[in-house]
Length: 259
Ligand code: PEP
Image 1 (cartoon, protein in one colour):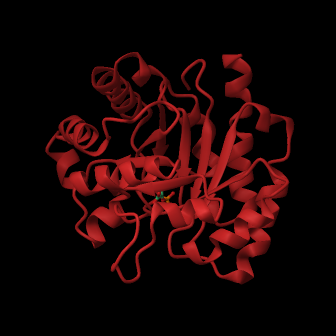
Image 2 (spheres, rainbow, N blue to C red; image 1 turned 90 degrees about the vertical axis):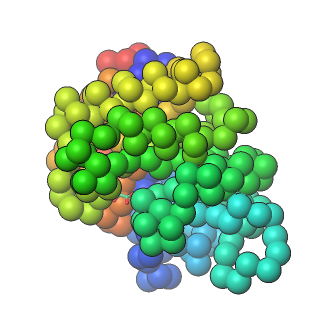
Image 3 (cartoon, rainbow, N blue to C red; image 1 turned 180 degrees about the vertical axis):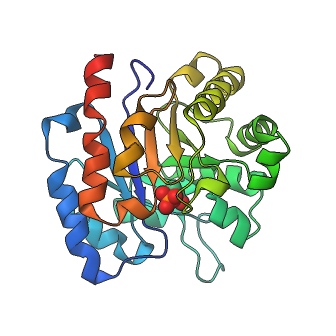
C-alpha cells in the first residue's frame, strides 16, 4: 500500500446477479460495518438492474455502490445505454470505465474511455479507469508501454485523487486464476505511479491504484502488501459475501502497519 492513501476494496459483479442475490449484497453491507471501515473504503458494482435496490440496502452501511459502465453522453438516442447521471440518480458513487471486457467486447478505445470518465466526473461520480496488457503484449514485453499509452489517453485532464481511481488489470489474469508475480505487480504499480505524477503533478501521488485479476481471499494479503497497491478490484470472488469480506479483512494488517 501507499502510506496516506486510503485503500479501496471494490467488487465487480459483471453480468451476474438477480434479485435472488440481494442477500449477498446485504451480507456484504452488514459485514463491512467493522472498525476497519474507518480506514478502508468498500464498493460493490452490481449489474445496473440491482443498482437502485442495492443502494437502498446500503443505506446504513459504509459499503458504497457503483456501476460497471456508463455512456459518454448525458442523454439522448442511445438505446440500451446508461448515463453517468442515471447512476448518480440511483445514488451510485462510482463507475468503472474501460474494463477490458468493455474494451474487447465493445471495441472501446482509450479516447472513448476518457470521454466516459469525463462524463462520470460531470455527474460527480468517481471514475475507476481500467488499464492492463493482454497476454500477447506481455509476452512481447510491452506491458509498460501499454500502461503508459492507456493512462495518457484514458485519464481525463480534470482527473484528481478524489474523482479518479486507476485499476491495473492484466487481461490474462482476469478470471483465469493466474496472477502476475509480486515483482511484476510492484514494477507495474511503481511505473503507473510515476506516470500519474508526470501527468497530474503532485496530485498523481495521491491517486489510488488498484490491482485486479484473480484476487481471492488466499492471495489478497500478499497483493495488498505490495507498494503502490492501494486496494483491489475483485470480480469472481466478490460474488460471495464470505469471500469479499475475507478480502476486506485482509487489509487490516497493512493499514495497521501504515498507521
Ligand atoms: C475483473 O474483471 O475486474 C476481475 C478482476 O475479475 P476476476 O477477479 O474474476 O479475475
